[in-house]
Amino acid sequence: MEMMRISIHRRLLCSVYKVVLRSYVNSCRAVLLPRFGGPEVLQVHSDVPVPDLKPNEVLVRSRAVSINPLDTRMRSGYGRSIFEPLLPIILGRDVSGEVAAIGASVRSLVVGQEVFGALHPTAIRGTYTDYAILPENEVTAKPSSLSHVEASAIPFAALTAWRALKSTARISEGQRILVVGGGGAVGFSAIQLAVAAGCHVATTCGRESVDRMLKAGAEQAVDYVAEVVDVELAIRGKFDVVLDTIGVPETERYGINFLKRGGHYMTLQGEAASLADNYGLAIGLPLAKGAELKKQIKYRYSHGIEYSWTYMRADFEGLIEIRKLCDAGRLKIPVDKTFPITQVKDAHVAKDKKIIPGKVVLELS
Image (tube, rainbow, N blue to C red; front, side):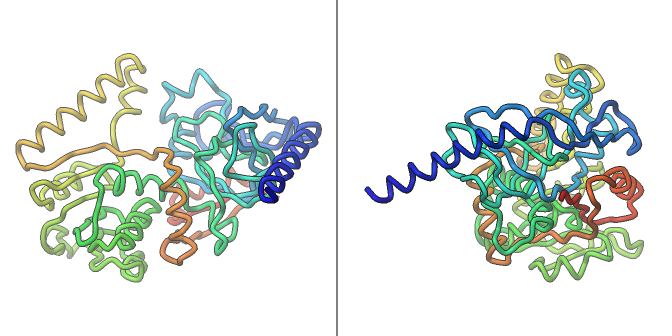
């Protein structure tokens, strides 16, 4: 009975806080994308409206948001078939901050709680804003062991890797996993997730990343840019699963050839968005499905393996497991540099020109 009274009291406090908040926070600072182009098109506005929350949504006071490759690609026009009619939009998928308000049906979070999470790839109102809005199943308690900057670097990349390895390939202890391009955030997340699952992991990466891959638990890390290295000769044995984060014809060719019969090849570079951009949604999406199906049939008969395009998708249970791995010290993505949100253009320039190869985070105060 006492616990019930405490729960009711807490819910009432949250409701009161939300009413008070709404009377003050009707607009906030956000980075808008009014048109596609280079970093110069990004605009910081101080009076962007904050929509009313739907029953299942959470308002997060953003403290840090990371820059993903999807952000820079969207800024340049990737996904224009979806986003162009809706401009201006707010970029950003990852966020770490505090719960500022909750919708009427939210039960897993309370106001004031530190949280982290990631929006799905097609979200229109992203996280480059002082107040981000996420569905309840896309946000959870922040790993207590990490700062907001560190936490913001993780969810989108880790959930992308989680969907590939856990939901699609359904990896299990003892399997051999090859991660093509382990130096990126998704690849590095995949290595750590596979190691935590008890798998034997090999990866390809740039020379500067080799030591980091081995320290994360990879049993072999091959420098794929070294002219003296032939990846197909350097990597030993066959694999149950290949996750290809590069997705060019060469990596697809040798990734497929590294698989055992019954294995699973997954690439992050599916053609759905590009075909939709080129031909429109009505034609492009069926073409993309046909292209993927054609490859699935081809490789099933020629190599006896499964073939998939993989993308990030919200997975609440996965996000909770990712948080637990973070707190256990088994999953972390290094942050190479931070920028204040007001310098978002500089941050995008740095990513476009590959001045900063690793993770970049925008801080909000």
